[in-house]
Length: 254
Image (cartoon, rainbow, N blue to C red; front, side, top):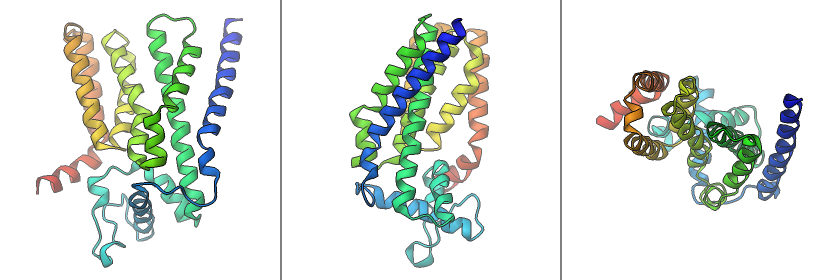
């Protein structure tokens, strides 16, 4: 009976959040592409990945079609893992009038799903019985926040928008580790990777937030189990992202 009620709640809030997503993406249904501050830069990044894939590069480090064939090392200094999705759509010949709105919808849906998971986990940590409902309402408010809209529609900062999708999950799962939910560390690794592989500045902000949380809960952090879980998430996060870190650090140093 309890499982049936929980399933019904999830279905109800899934419909609400999908409806919320439909409202948010309405500006994307107009003809053409919504012009924004950084739009051309990101479209060039997508096109560069597509051209690099066609030329046999993987991962695409140098976008050779720019600067009269000399190329720009965009793939070294800007994380672009999530841009491979729209680049593949371009690879198969879809125009930007379809590719960019589809990519934006993908970002919005990802933000809703990850933030719902994050806020539901937070409520669950507090032993709240209505963690599914409260988590869904918090996710709806989060994805409707004015700064998120500005990232999508005014600035076209897709990197930061994707980072915002993973930020709550990274913070909440890290708090979970501190409070004894040691099995949450793989979720933290995935969330950290999501932030890092989309926006470096957001990664710095996340690191500062982790340091503040660690300083506030320093007595818990230095317990044996917490130290082991944190060591695992640091090591795994480093190893998973090494393919981007090595060339970035090499060229940044030189």
